[in-house]
Image (cartoon, rainbow, N blue to C red; front, side, top):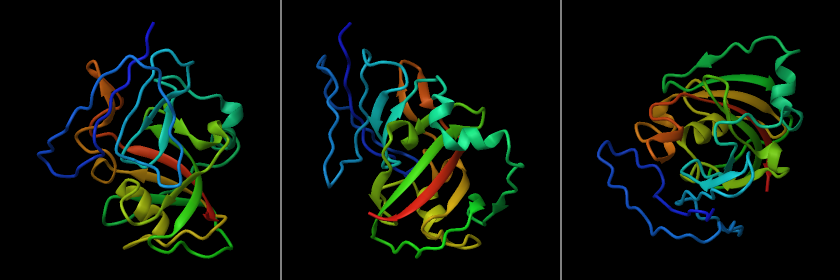
Length: 212
């Protein structure tokens, strides 16, 4: 079976987005890693193994989806904690973003525009894991507060009204409403189904490592 690659632009909060579909090819997917990552494309390969359906999306994360399959829990520290740790009590901000600190860091706060590193696990409300940097064995490096990631991430790490900034070394759970995530468009959509359905609430376990 040939692989299929396509791209769409990053999430646009405009209620009337005008998505532009890129060219369709049958070439195998090539991962692109560079110091300046392009976050404006979603890429898929139909022939790569399960738990590695890769794309680049507005989240700013070179996401390798398990395409509706749970990731290996042995590689997911957040999943391993779930059975032993008490439920996290979220605090909601006026924006709709909610957070719960699991570990308060002891390092400095991130500065807007700074290149930082973070590990994360992303889930849907039904518990389906759609991405994990732990599973790839490499944290995400991105510039915070400049739109390289969804708004829920920028606010959840930098802080905002009702939300304190994370400190390096900290671990935080985020519950991100659709308007601060992928909104009405969802993400990874094709053939009538989406990896992240439209209007999805996203649940993230974020570990802010520090400056990259």
